[in-house]
Image 1 (cartoon, rainbow, N blue to C red):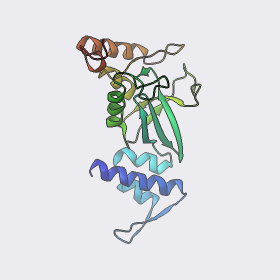
Image 2: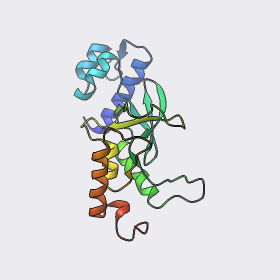
Image 3: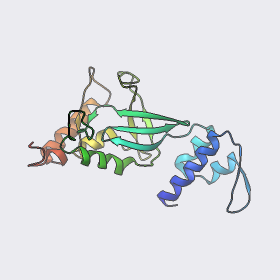
Image 4: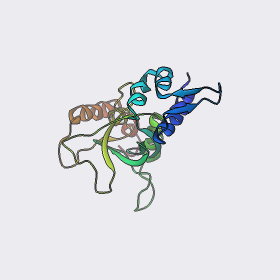
Length: 192
């Protein structure tokens, strides 16, 4: 099944489950399917979520390089990625910061319309001062998006008040990106 078809299929299933449906009509075959039919035919990464009605969050929008909007059990939530800061594309003082558009586009390429796993960090607050959830974001292959953004040079390690779970790994990712002159650390990029 292609990624696009899997996404469409997943969104339809999520919406039906959120609507409280236990039986589903398959317009293609005319069959009535039960939740167990959906579990049996779903991609492996979605089977346990459908069976338990705990739906994996899906990215509905990338706001910028370090902020996303996620649909969690039918509720849209803004999520600020822990431990990473990317240049701003909406700077209230004027124009966007250098490499902000590139960072936003990179995060979008990684996450747009993807199902993700969110992880809170007990060492951090649940939400920031703007009401955004603070989370680590993982793809289904266990790619830690927060770290990947830093590793590829689209942001830098960011500690807010207290050390956090993956701080050492994120600092090492930034060191590697700087040494390799990746992304915003490149020569003649943002006068680095």
